[in-house]
Image: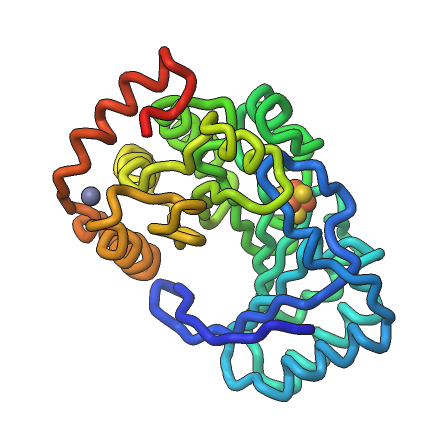
Length: 304
Ligand code: SF4
Ligand SMILES: [Zn+2]
């Protein structure tokens, strides 16, 4: 039930091994975002099963970094109880873990819950998706505002913890060019508030509005070139990461098929090194991507 793997993360300016775990919980309480079906992974699990999943994580841990994700919010009482969170902290301290990375919607973040993590370093990822309230509501249906996000960020920062802000590249109903612009503007707006920005490239998940549009050829996941373009245009020196899910696949962010693998690897390498020069790549399909930037503004449907 718990998925566990190890990967490299950036930690204090260096690469560091991280154990990543996705715990099965009751899942996201919101479940209304137009691009997300993570809640399909949820199950009505008992406290005992949740604790067993946590034990499985600590049976495997030999890293300083621990990412614990659910298909929702780590700080939602209905997914992870306070007892279980305190148990995770205890076990993490025993195991020599230095930093825990979690995700939550802003409404579940509170001083009381954060206080339990004081003995550790904590990073909380929040899916703001865009700094534009109109796009977040109209295109994503996220159900919270930029000021809700800022309020949660203030609480997290007051404890000296880190905030990771997820931005979504290409929500439905935006053209390819508007999508780049939205990520760049959003990144520039949040860069002073957060420690790291993770650019998430929309992929077509089952049972979502994005899937319905995609099936009718009214939506195309972003070009990988658009991610590179957005990263290059962000003016701040805030840490940026981008690890495209389903990169190169038809349901994921993709280019022409020939260059996808190289571009995805370069985005991953950039995420670890922050060296923008690794993103200086080229392929014949850039011409088509540039045309898409022009045409989608008018056609409102993908060029291909
Ligand atoms: S994107 Fe996050 S808040 Fe929205 S439905 Fe998915 S898990 Fe819930
Ligand atoms: Zn190409």
